[in-house]
Every structure is written in C-alpha cells, then in structure tokens.
Figure: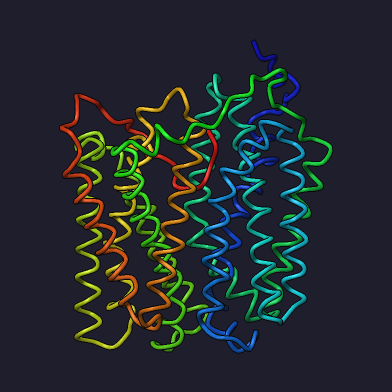
Length: 412
C-alpha cells in the first residue's frame, strides 16, 4: 500500500486556500486581465491580428495540453517540484512579457507563461486530491475555488483596463509577475510534498477512453460550451472597442455582464440539472448555444455592432455554457472511475485542442471584427454535439450529481 504523506500537510482550510488559490486564480487571470489591450497589441507589437490571436489561443491550448504531461510527471517526481518550477516559469515569463515589444518573442513568452500555469495548476489539484480526497474539507476547497474563479472573467478585464489606463499595458504583466512571485515565496517554505510514497507506477491507458462514444459526446459538449466563451473573449475586444467604439473600461464592464450571466445561472443550475439529468441538461445547453447564435446573426444582419447586438445574445449562450458544463465532466467520466486521473487529463486536453484549433481557425478565417466567428463556432459545435448525442445508446437510470462540475483544468 502506498504510504501517504498528507500528514505532513497540517494547514487549516483558510491557510490552505491562501496557499493554493493564487496558483488557480493566476492561470485564469493571465487570460482575462489581458483582454482590454488585445486590440492595441497589433500596433504595439507591429504585427497582425492573427499573430495577436495566437497569444490567446496558444495560452489556452498549452494550459490544457500540459495536463497530460505534468500530471504523470507530478506522480513520478512529486507535486512540490512541479509546482515550484511552474510558478517560477510563470513569474519569469510575466516579467519578460512586460519588457518586450517583439512579436515572436512575445508569443513565445506567452507559451512559456502557459507552461508554467499548467504545471502549477496540475500540482495544486494533485495536492488537493492527495490531502483532502477522503476528507470533508474537499467540498469546501472545491466550492471556494469555483466561486472565486467565477468572478475572474468578470473582474479581470476591469482590472486590466484600469492598469492599462493609468500605468500602460506593461503594468498588466508586471502585476501578474508580482502576484506570482508573492505566491511562490509563500509556497517555498510551506508547500510540503504530498505525493504518496511507494506509489505503484501504472501505464497510461488512453485506448478504452478514446473508444467510448459517451466520453467523446460529453467532451464535445464541454468543448462547445467553453469554446464559445473562448471565441467570445477572442472577438469581443475587436468588436466592442474596434467597431462599436467602447473605451477599454467600457468594454471591460460590458464583458463582465456575460460572466455575471454565467454566475447567476450557476445559482439555479443545480435544480435544473437534477430535474433534466445529464443528457437533458447537455441537450438544453446546446439548444441555448444555437439560440444565442441565431440572435447574434440577427444582430449582425440588422444592426451595427453594439452592446445589444453582440453582448446581450451572449447572455443566452452563457446560460447554455453553464447547463452544459455542469454535466459534461460527469457524463464523460462516469465509466472510468478506475482510471479517473487519466480520463480527466484527457478530457481537458482534448477540450483545449478542439477549442484552440477550431476556435482559432474560425476567428482567423472569418472576420474577427464581427460576430461571425462566434456564430459559426457555437452553431457548429452545438450541432455536432447534438448529432453525437443522438447516436448514444439509451441512457440507463443514472442520476447526475447535483453539483455543477468545474470547468477549469484540474487533476482530481
């Protein structure tokens, strides 16, 4: 039997949250705080919108791909070295991003920043699993993480806009570097190793998971949901600032309403998920994506870019995102309890690949200054998911968990 080292982790829940939460929050904040200056980065870096789009797409893709690298690595060498290495990479990349105006170097540093964020995320949630898997405190930790992360898309762009307005765009990355450095210095003496000693080494078996139609259907649903939000925040700065004439702060406040729509929907999603079940919730989530895409199409055809033609339809899509993402993890992983860690890593990795490749391609190929990339992605992925769902065998009498699943990359 593996010998657990979790006894060395003697932090209270508030102390553990103070220790771990910064790494979870910074990985998401590095996406959202940067959005208000995305339109300006084309001129700052002297490059094209497609290259600037890579600074968003590569970050998200690497954040997910790192799951299948750093998860097994943390099982082999330990959580602490993976976390500290990731934290140092994220910190260094953040400061270097503030110091460069060269497009190739900027894109490369964003990739390094994402590698660091992915490593720190994996180590954080592997530690939570090691220490709290059989303890009631786990529910408190996960729910608190989820609550905090729900506010990052709402507050991050506002913080980024204020920093850029008063101190310039470089202040965004300096702030990320300072926060990461503080979190790293706090973890250095206090984050003890929790990987079970003498843990058995197991091969990574992707085959049974990849052959499961149910796994693919719910992973596609998760990709449809999270990718819709990704395409929204990839195009929103160009539409609202570049076309509709919003200020950076005005854009941030408008963007925040979509995040708030997700937060409000989360408040009552549990009740409806319990009523509709896994399949019913996924179906309704996809239908809301299609409805939002139809409203965006009407706004694009009939009116100029504005809050009401671009942001308000996103509220409908936001509700669909919540209903889908609340059940997709349970649906995808329900048959793989014996290999949950591998299945979770693959679930998030595939989602990141689908979103990164399909979402980025549509933003680049279609006019990123319009709603068309979002219309195309939401419609395409929702229809693919619904078609895949129709080919699943009739569901058994399986009740869903009434607790919405996390939609941020984690290893549990």
